[in-house]
Length: 381
Ligand SMILES: [Zn+2]
Image 1: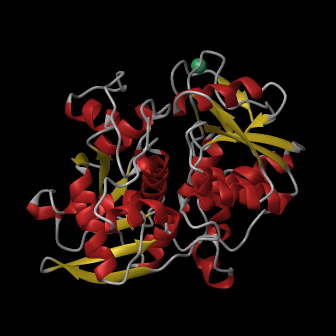
Image 2 (image 1 turned 90 degrees about the vertical axis):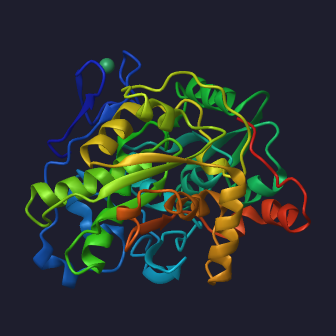
Image 3 (image 1 turned 30 degrees about the vertical axis):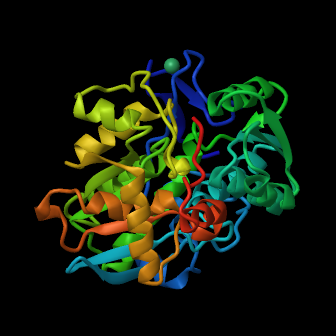
């Protein structure tokens, strides 16, 4: 194994990577400090997937990669409201969302550990991504979902061969059920596990490479658990620390007003999320009431000089219409970035880069209801 250690972000305890853990004994979340970066002179010889940046993931050199050529998604330039914007088309991935970046790295790692049985909790993009990579690796996979989850959301997970367990109660109850199961099956959690975050760094590297080894001034990213924001920050920070780029982009995190614990913590200058009242939103991908890695997400926001924006469902659906009208069909969670861009400080608007995280094909029910003029299907949190 590589010399990298897990380090608890709360108490500082370290663990070797051989330990089969997803969090610290104190309950804190684990971090990995990237100790190396890829050699950029080698990139032109490498294939087009996230694995072209493999040295940055902190994994052993002889690891077998569980890959379906994820990543290397294009950046499209489009004009909205008289401004030129860059759209990172990150929904163009094997399972239809950015989560394939994290799933590819995490499932490769757990396979290397000799683990053959994993569990996860998510009825959305993470459940699909982890199920897809478990199938590719030949692992048994169980996904816990809240009992109210519509069948249409579970179909993709079932098609990959994962077992779906419906848990009565809330999204949090599904999370607790997965943690209980983790004594017999490894909890390959997109919410907790730091190797998932390591894989998400790859989006930052791609942006840097595709923009001619420069970084944009501002990047707008949806925030649910905040793992993508944390991962992109780590990637941008490594590029600056290793001398590949000059300045971090300002990272702007977007939450739905109905479920905005990170936004509320940020504007109140807190380092942790408090329990907040949460409602329903069309942007179910970012409706995470208790994000476990919030401390790292809030630190990343502040260190980048960024900030948070909360958006209403009506603004998200307007933005989804605007994007679709330009030929870009994404789910409401992704459209939240354009809704947020319409509310950010004017100096950050020109040439901002919006990260579009999930395909519109994932949100057929929501958009179908929207087009019929009804109350679009909403997440319960
Ligand atoms: Zn700890």
